[in-house]
Length: 497
Image (cartoon, rainbow, N blue to C red; front, side, top):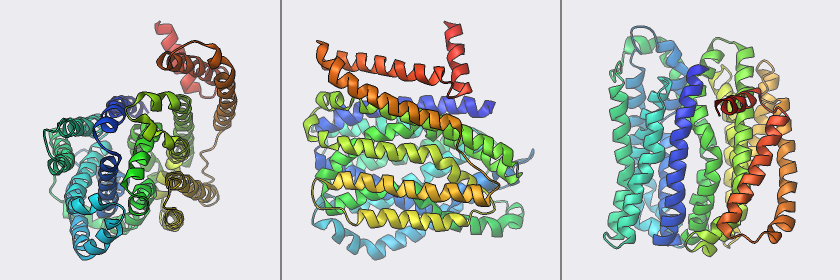
């Protein structure tokens, strides 16, 4: 767990540096220099590329994580890296063919309400390729327990590259066409940086060692193709923007985009913790050390629930201040409910995604197919009912929360009944829920009684509000001993002082 802790902390720092940059870019650059339609355009393009690239992986990234322990020995990694590059290339070729065949029907979907998407849809394949191999190289680094640099590239590098494009366009130095090309090109630069870093680690060969692959080839192929379908679970939020763009237009998609940027902060810690804990969980599952799997699952789930709910709480109590401060904030304030609903969906997904990892790494991974089909059908069915009105963004966010809740309820039951009574639930999680319920009541009292009596400006009030409510939240967590790890860290920080 020492490696997990160190790399998770470094990765989290990279993530939060990216969040800080993203906060500035999203709320003080995008809202000032881009219209709602232009923000919606970039969101639809990126989400389409992420969805297509996840399918084009053909399950390779999950397969690399699961089977890496079988390939790794003192002499090397026996061609698994080469395989991880070759298979997605075949997947991308299949996607490119499908794109050519279905291009016109897809364009027709967006032509009425989102003509800008139709104008730049031809760039989606290029953006898909960049997103695909950015993820491939990042996954290869994660199985080597090296996630910090790839996280910096994804969370910081891409945002800085995009910031340059936003400012050039905002100051009228480039046209919209050039801006969109630069925006897509930033993902290509990220791909190349990840490749350079992976190569610099040494002991990496992209030559496929077919003799080592052959004994596990059949199982790897079945697992990878299976994961091609199950990967949809992580992409349910992408459906929202794609459906919104088609049914409600890019302006509402832009409002939804800003709201989702806020909600995305909730799951930042899991991006690091999940990336570094998956290889450890995969090894424990392979060796059938179910007590260890149980312990790891509960540990990851508890701390992610604690962190994600705390972040969502502090965000929500300051939302009105945030919308009052950002440029054109009144145009985006309608997304407040979206932030809450999407934030709760992020809490559920990030807190319990470890269940998905456990099932996918086990010999019962085929069961995931049933649950993913149900999850995807639920999300698509709910999104297909989006109204062509301003309520569409709230309905889309509620659809995501509902789909994830139903999915994890089924998954919890399966792990407990069919996989050695695995359960990620603990007494600490019940304490977290109770604390958050109490803190919600405290916020209502604070906003209705205390704040009206304090003659402070919006920024000063936000600082005081965050300090007081955040301090009360931290005190409750420590005094009730929600997590021995958190208490130990708190004592260590106090002793250092």
